Length: 315
Image (tube, rainbow, N blue to C red; front, side):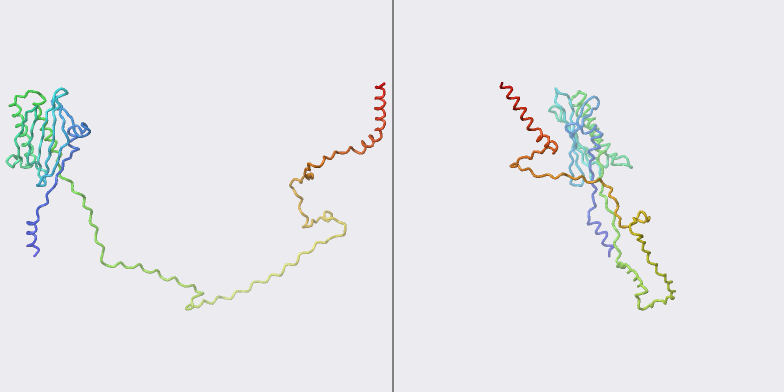
């Protein structure tokens, strides 16, 4: 049954198409880097003529491939207007070149090449037919443009070498087209086994102590000999107080109750300070008793002498 369904499924399901992308960074590196016009263009020289290539415009094709369009300018200088060219390439889903076409705009004159298709008749290399077709398409494209430029009697060096600049971009774009890398598929984890996990074995019960286990009686122990009793220590003898009037220093014994002499500094007694009373007169210290007796003894004589001296002065 399954053998008959497999061919039908293969016929019904369309084949998966590969995807291709353009490595814009590799293309810019081949042209000298995207350094001009704020990172949107690359400038270079071919045969002493200056050219500028802009970043390519890429869009997907209905058949799964891509369509690439590139603008190329011929820089003629400040006093002359630049020439412009466009290069259009179509690639299949597997990266094979399908067709190529280019057009030039030279001061109001337009030169368009024929649509060059990469058919099977253009391939001569059996080992690499796609590369052979790409080389053939590029050669036919440049030959067609060069022939049309010569018909217009154009002799300016930068315009004559314009087809060579287009072929240079054509080769770099073809090398930059690569298959899109497939995302890494994570490795499938093996399904868990259906067998139920065995529970962890319970730890064995710890044996009970022998003294508390009723099933196992305690083993009889051998009788031990009683320890010999030690005689009580005799009471300490009381010291002889000795005869009355004898000091402990005389007998050579010192009582245990004698306190140790203090080793710190002695306290200094402070005088008694009485509170100050503003309503009470200060007490005048009296002279010593000897001086008081001298004043009382000679006071009268001093007064007599003073009175006599005053009387003499009046006279």
